[in-house]
Length: 254
Image (cartoon, rainbow, N blue to C red; front, side, top):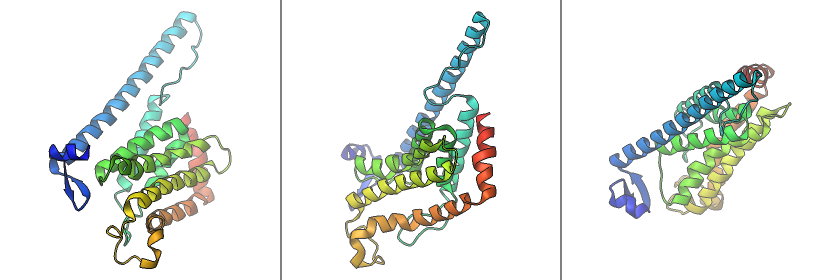
C-alpha cells in the first residue's frame, strides 16, 4: 500500500519513514476535509428530515410526535456545539511547549474533545473524537505502516471520546471521564511506541540508555502527563466544576 502511494508521488521514503510530498499533503487535506464536510452535511440533512417528518406526523395525528434519534447527532444545536469544541481542540493542540524528547503539552486540547463525550454521550463523543483524529493526522502525518497510523492517530485520539461513558454520572463524571479518555489515548500511543518506535534508531541520544525498555511510556507520559495533571487540578476547582458540569451542560442540552 505504501509502495503504491510512493509510486503516485504522494509519499517519499527516508530511512524507513514515509513523509508526504507537497502533492501528498494537499491530497490528504483535501480527502480528509471532504470526508468531514460530507459527514456533517449528511448528518445535518438527516436531522432536518427527521424534524420535518416528526412535525408532519404530529400535525396529521393532532398530537406531538415522538422524537426520533439520529444516527449521531440529535439536533442542529448539538452538532454546532460539537463542531465548536472540535475546532477549539484542534487549534489549541498546535500551541504549548514542546518537550525535549518530543510531543507537546497543549492548551487543554484533550479537555475540549473529551468534554464533547461528557456532554452528549459515547456515540457522539467517539464520532467527534474520530473526526479529531483525522485532523491530527492531516496536521502532522507520520507513516510507517497502516497499523502504526491507526494506533498513533485514529485509535489514540478517538479514545478521547471514551468520556462519553460517564455522561450520565451525577458526581465527578467529567473528571473521571477525562481521566479514562486520556488514559485511553496514552495506552494506544504507548502501544504504538512499543511496536514501532522503540528501535534505538528512533530514540533520542539524550534518553537514558538504561531505560530504553521504558522509552515508549516515558516518552508519552512526558507530554500527556503534565497536561493531564494541570487539567485535573483545574477541574477540581469548585467554581470551574460548577460551570462545566452544571451550567454549560444544562445550556448545551436545552
